[in-house]
Amino acid sequence: MTDISAGPPADDPAATLSIDEARRRLVEAAMMHVPFDGWSDATLRAARRDAGIPRALAEAACPRGPVDLALAFHEQGDREMLRRLRSENLASLRFRDKIAAAIRFRIEAAEDREVVRRASSLFALPQYTADGARALWTTADRIWTALGDSSDDINWYTKRTTLSGVYASTVLYWLGDETEGSAATWEFLDRRIDDVMQVEKVKGRIEGNPVLRRLFAGPIWLAGRVRAPARGHEIDLPGHLSAGPGSTPG
Image 1 (cartoon, helix red, strand yellow):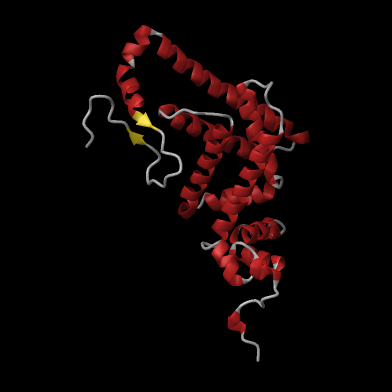
Image 2: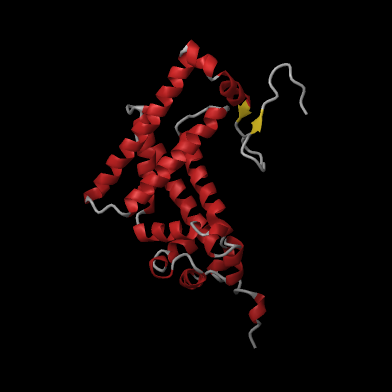
């Protein structure tokens, strides 16, 4: 009698897979099922079967089930975007055009609109909205970091918050875009980035105008106390307030 509790045989290739590789294969196998079953338990089971991934390994790769599978799909899209940013020659582009290129690369990495639409529906559920927001923020952070952003003050937050909004709205537009080559989406993206640049110009005018600077002295002082989170450390909140020179830490 075969001992089914012993797991896959030693010569089973799946037995030697890393969790990262198992997750990658599960995402790849899920692509043909998501348009029909969404990011669901049924899709995860089918992907596990098609990829030949043992149940225990699949549970280790996606401990929360379908939501972890969807997050792994998003992560793979980020990696493809970063790969293209490294391989493409963007040196001659204006900075706003580099941002546009990064968002375009990220959207093009998704390829299948229905798969993305299903993910958007999943992350719209109350229990997963925080996961979706975190994924958006991470994408925006990776774009700014890849493009050389070194801010460590309030600008660290405003840049990522604004870019998260631009990316999310562009994805939603892309989901309904039927133009050739998604031309309308890229025009929409250019308009949104122009809006962002206008906000940056307003901030610059305030900083350079003595009257406006005095008027906004309080908010400017408070913003100056905010610092970006330390890289490489797990923290509960995305940043901290600086005590400032001459202050006594609490």
